[in-house]
Image (cartoon, rainbow, N blue to C red):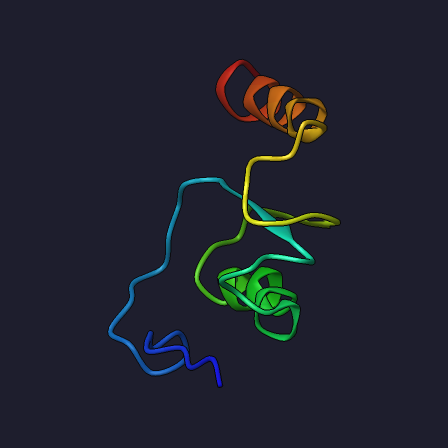
Length: 79
């Protein structure tokens, strides 16, 4: 059984002012979708600007990731 050892809810984390982009994969061999599907919500507890995508596929950067990453970079760094 997969077990997360991080302390998202109870850790001594301060609010994050940086924008966060997280791309998770639904068929990741290392992180079950039941866990990764909750990352967007968990990240939003610590950061106001969170962009979260859960895409089909295994544990690798998706080929369609560029279509997500480039507009995010444009919005965050060039606006």
